[in-house]
Each structure stands twice: as C-alpha cells, then as structure tokens.
Image (cartoon, rainbow, N blue to C red; front, side, top):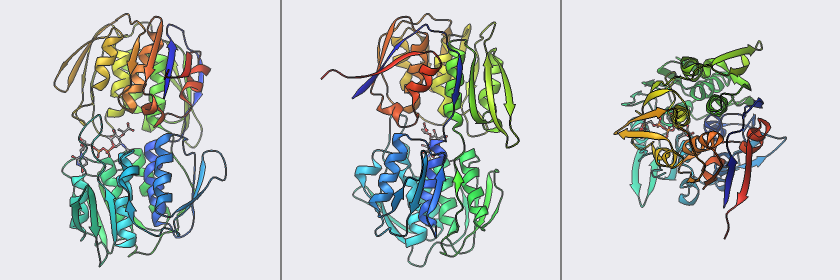
Length: 428
Ligand code: EPZ
C-alpha cells in the first residue's frame, strides 16, 4: 500500500487544470448500456472508481476501447448477462447505477446490494421503491437485488421522500427506455444530473424540467438510444479542493477548466471567509478562477445541502480550512449520518474541534503539527492532505487508496503548485 508524505509550511502558487467529474462520469458509463451504437466519452478522469466501473461493465460483457488519453469508447452490444457481482460492487457503491439501465433494457437483472461505507449506511430503498412503482418486481436474496419487469417498465409519477443523486440518475435512465411518461418529483439538480438529462434530450427523448426538481421523461419503449459523443463536465469538487489548498495556505493559485455556475456555493463561501476570486471565462462559460490571498481569514458557518446549496463533498475540506480561520466556525452535516471521520485525524494534527451530533465547531487559528494520520473515505483524505500542507514538519497520510478513487494525479498537481509531497510505499 502507498502513503503520502507531505512537508508542510510551503507557500503555494501557480495553476492546475481540473479533470472531468468522477460523479458525472459514473452515470454516463452506466448510460452506455442504453446505447444503440458504441458510446464515446471524453474528459473522463483516470481514477480508481472509473476503472472499477469499467471492470463492472466488462464483466457484463461490454467491450471498451481507449481511443486517446481520458477517452473511452463503450460497446455494450456484447452484454450477455445481467448480474453485477458483489466482488466488484462492494468496491464502489455507485455500481447501483447499472440497475435502472439493465432492468429497462433486459427486463431482468441481479445487482449486489452496495452496502454501506464509512460515511453512512447509504441504503438504496428509494431506488427500489421507484422501480417497483414503474412495474418492477424486486426481491432481496442473499445480498442481491433480484429485479424483473417481464412486461417492461412503465412510466408513472415518482416522489422521492429525500433528494437522492444516484437515485435520480437511476430512475432517469430507467425511464429513458420505459413505456410512456415518467414524472420524478423531488429530483436532484446537481450538474451531473443535468448533463445526463441533456444527453438523453440530445438523443431525441422528450424531457421537461431539466435542471429543476421536477423532471418528466417520455421513454423510447425499449428502443436503444442514439447517444452522441460527450465530454464529461469538469469536477466541481476537485476544483473546490484545490481552491481550498490555496485558501488554507493563503496562496495565489489558479484553477482552469471550471464552470462557474457549478461552483457558486463554494466560491461565495470562500469570499465570505476573506478571499477574492478573479474569473476569466471563455464563450462556452468554461472559466479559470484565481484565488487571491486574504488579509484576514475569518471563521464561517456551513450547513451542507443538495445542489445548489453547499455540497457535502466539500464539508471535510472546509473543516480543514476552518482550523486556519480566526474564530469559531460551525459546520452542520445534514446529508450523511457519519461524515465526520476526518475530525479525529484533524485533531491528531492539532485542530481544535468539538462535535455535537451532526454539528462540528472548529476554533482557529490553530498551529498544526505533522504526524501520521489515516484516510477513512475519499473526501476525508483530501481534508488531511490540505491540513498537512500547513502543518509544521512531516505528515504521513496512510490508506490513500481512498484518495485514488476520486482525485486524478493529485501529487503531481499539488507539486506543480509548490507543495513538498511524495508517494511512498508502506514498509512491510
Ligand atoms: C452521491 O451519492 C455522490 N456519489 C456522493 O459523492 C455525494 O456525497 C452524494 O451524492 C450527495 O451529494 C456519486 O454521485 C457517485 P444520495 P449518493 O443518494 O447518490 C439517503 C463522493 O465523495 N438515501 O444523494 O449515494 C442517503 O443515505 C461521493 O464523490 C436513502 O436513504 O447519495 C443520504 O443520507 C460520496 N435511500 C441521502 O439520501 C436511498 O435510496 C443522500 O444520498 C438513497 C439515498
């Protein structure tokens, strides 16, 4: 196993190019199951979760080619069975995204229950309830979801009790091949959900309400779709993480290839804390954002919520930043029941954090000191990297396979900004 060694205290400067979004790529990989002809995706990040999803598709019989760097051509005409096996699904919960497409195309499938993870139980009950209302018969047996729809899926009205990103994506894809119109009420409107809907609309499906929390889709009645080549949208969470690297070291850094409207909750919060952000955008609204060092870095309050609110996937990174802010910051996590796994590790670095249920209070400015810490989940690990950038001395971050799931070339990008960071092998 690898670990990262960071020597903190170095000021950063320079620029990084943001990769394609992991959480936009995953549903698009699943969408390939609905394609009439090979489906080409570009700007796909080279990260572990993408590799795992591709392995899942290949295990189903799909064929993948790699025409160029960060591009993939998926041919699912060779898919010859519909069982998503535990050994692959357990590595990545988002594998549940094959459920809707497999069921709507083949009318039957077996998908291993994804199980929980460090940040919470993460049930899929809303996915299953919605598919049942579309006419699916669903049983759970020996840890697998057994789903059948012998007469195909039928459009209906679905109300999600809570907003669910992959739940919305699963049902949007199921509805794409269903008979009739499906209305999804309380749908998510994250940029990755919007891109999925736009691709289906470009393929000729009638979709209303794209970008709102009420989406309706008239299905193709099982005809496979003419999906056009797509460039995956930039990763707003990766971009936010690098802006936080600039903020926590109070350094001027620039991130390229970002979409401003995807980042507003993050950039407005950074401005509230004391940082100016200068934008320059091209006519496709793809921007560069330069973070300007602050004269005073003030404490802040955050309550995580669904898009366009403050993203839960940025909560850990801002908690690390809060250790360097003057005053007491209050961070409330509302989406996941256990998304404070980074607190103990930040405290080991010297952070002054107190927890009360789903609320963390962080008092700064704290002087942090390098030590050994352990990553527990993807975004928690990025928070430990950020804190190590300012901690005095050497920090060793272990179990960084969590980081490798969602950050492309993290060491190279941080090193290009001036960080002293190395990837080393654990001693046997
Ligand atoms: C997506 O997870 C993201 N993953 C997560 O990013 C992100 O944190 C999350 O949305 C919230 O924004 C991908 O897009 C691949 P949810 P998802 O369904 O879809 C509950 C990262 O770091 N719920 O929106 O699994 C659930 O327990 C990852 O990149 C049910 O109760 O999240 C949670 O409390 C981490 N029943 C809440 O809803 C269900 O059937 C939101 O979960 C589904 C969800």
